[in-house]
Image (tube, rainbow, N blue to C red; front, side, top):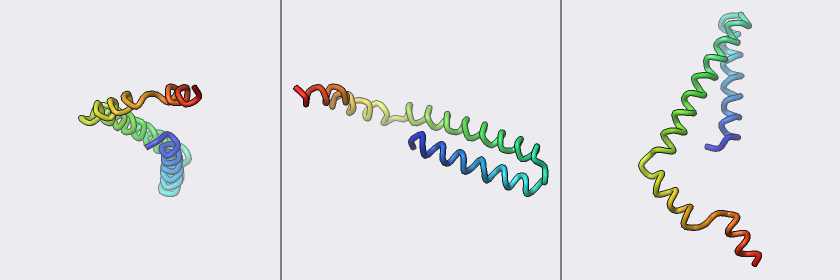
Length: 81
């Protein structure tokens, strides 16, 4: 999941939570509070996902594959020479 997908999902979720909470309670303050709580929970979940994705068993093998192929700058400099 890239950052753009995460931001679009986060904004969509925030909008839905804010509208549904306001519709259910009729209070803008409760809607704001519920939306802030939902955003905090979402951020904690995303951070936990990033930690899991970085430390999962196959992460070292994927990292080794990228280091063998060289960096993008090395590939660009090799092709221009």
